[in-house]
Image (tube, rainbow, N blue to C red; front, side, top):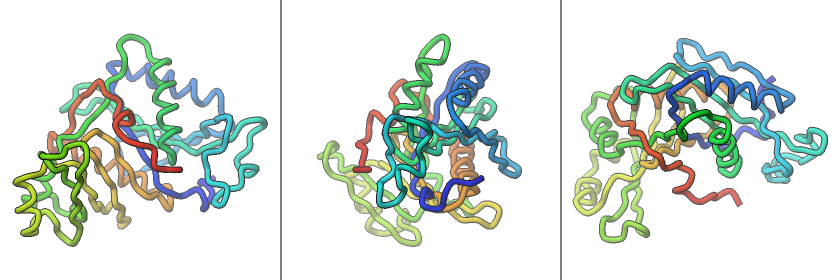
Length: 252
């Protein structure tokens, strides 16, 4: 059964790398052993294996005006739909990778913390994005149906303060972008990707945070498609810094 329509909202995700995919499988089993629901999600022609499960916490993170807390109550806890996707090693990274996706940043931070506790050996590495490489790829016309509809740049003179966004049909080819890029660095991008006649907008920032609006479960395949395309361009990088440590939780 798919998530309730009122729960279909923005999903945020991070990518995690680890040398042994068996550790990820053990983590998935650990998560499933503590939930009521764990369902495989079938994605056509995708190298990803996806599972949806209910992550239980002591309070409901869904806004009460959207979802009644009683609707998601599981005994004394509350359930939230999250996704766990694995795939074989990405060639550019050399390690198996998982995508963890949650409708709430706080929940995603809790899940990644539990993952770090569950994995054997070295701490997991996270994936960041070489945004300058992404901008070049999206500008050269080779991206096909993978297009940019919004770009955000960080002013070099005020790196902790100023972000400038440009949107439109092709903001990377605008005269304004040509002027701004002389004094600003690529920070994030909103892409539009089509798969199986289904179009989605997927946002990425340079820290490795991915987010998209998910009105239906099949849209998750588009987000995974974006990851695969970024990997094919050589734009993914390994980092010890968890992407969520770099962003504020804007859900309140």
